[in-house]
Image (tube, rainbow, N blue to C red; front, side):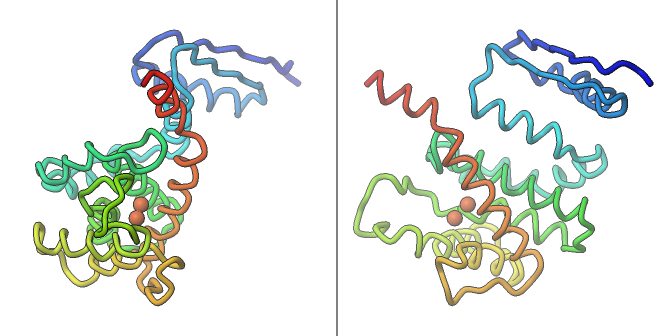
Length: 219
Ligand SMILES: [Fe+2]
Ligand SMILES: [Fe+2]
């Protein structure tokens, strides 16, 4: 039997995405040969590291990536959608990055678990699920019930700007269940996005706080 080894890999590069495919090959090699590995990113922040690990294990096949990009291209490039980059969703993550993360996880779950959801409804619904377009941290009369009201606002904006159909509207309107108790998801697309949003929101809230704290300390 081959001797087990521990591999230490240091990625001493700001742009670690360049090393992505080689690291993936090392992970596969180690798992096949029962080696343990420890990857060290001296220059990478905690939240980037968790995103990296997520991307590493939740890889989409090139054809899946291409389909997703084709569906989302008109939405991603719209300047009103780009405004989501100006608002913080959780911790240090912008609303734009948050909806990207939720879309990617929803799409990945659908592909890997063969859930049979409509890719267009799923991807557009996931990308626009928090399209409410304001900073919810700045309290005002109109957003003091943000948790309860933003799904409806996002849905209205999406209808107005992109003329989305009923099934996509359901994905957006019902993503806040069980907080919005009466809005129980019915379709598989709405269920997938609702659950993906819970997972991603929890992860972003718990693990993506470093930069915000650092900025707050500087002020
Ligand atoms: Fe939301
Ligand atoms: Fe969300």
